[in-house]
Image 1 (cartoon, one colour):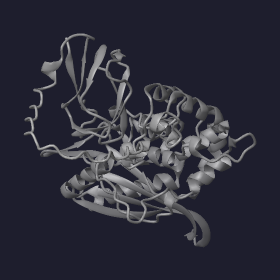
Image 2 (spheres, helix red, strand yellow):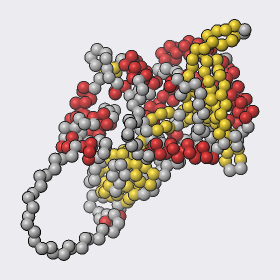
Image 3 (cartoon, one colour):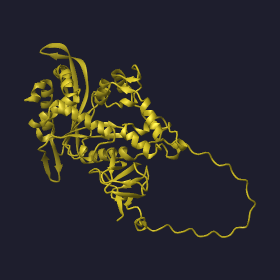
Image 4 (cartoon, helix red, strand yellow):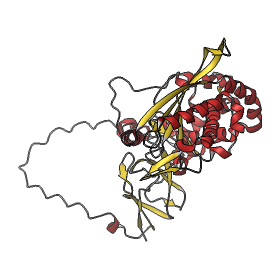
Length: 444
């Protein structure tokens, strides 16, 4: 029996989704559980699976359409059964126009030239289903082929994807590992190595290059992820009472610890640990001693959570997402590092699931890579504190009466004054500073 497929609820705060692309055409056979379409949620792009097997009889929502949750997007059924009752009443026929007096026929106007593919969809990438399938199999972003299609009206066909894959630069193993650490799309980096190989230096250069920003005079649609982020931070700013504290931390011993562990951990576990990984572990250790920051205000109760689930604020195209590392307290630094990298990579590739963003109890946001010395982050909705991490810079500092060059960093803690006062928040920040200045404490 034919049924309507509805826009699914893919996240707790999702109210609507934007159709990015359909992987099947009307009339195609589909199987339950196979990817059917891609949807932009209030978090990231996600593939949506077919809820049942059958034939995709009718697509009700086209790419770029914004559809509220639980509204119909397609009809699935058998090949021959009638579906008119699922499509709604037909539009009334237009009334016949009254006869007009005959006029002299005008000279036929020249037919307009076919519009280029980009103009047809205002920036959408037009590709055949086979091209999209091969791109998914080859792990190629179909958008990278925009303007290179050889099909009708510039449509990307299967051969275009295969040719692109054959000519794509090769990525050295070290470059791939560093790209994953730095969140760089290695396939998009210009290669300089022998035989068009992307080297580690190519990745580092791409990571250091400023990201392309909006251009002067550009109009940016206030939709999708950008709108979702705006709604979340506005709700947080209007509900929680934000207060920020800043503490300077001597990271010299942490820097030494990371450098001493780096090579061994990379060889043993295949991950390159970052300062965010170390700070996440230290944050959890400090919460064990000062748990009030790991709480939520729920009605007339302050609930201190029994798990420490740390969200890592991550920039993605068009906005910000916060994937969550569950139970940080029970994980080693290499485990935390691997999980953060996997979560962030999935989010940036639009492959994250709703579970990747659920359950956070505390958030870290690191702007140190941008050279920031101080900022006041906004609390993630449903939590009571967020830690802003700034750059590590060598500065003169007084140590036991002597001036030394030390690796210094600011930590900025924003907390909800409804949940805690300044003293317990400052107490937590002091404990975190103590752990980072004597990093062996995070293992005790």
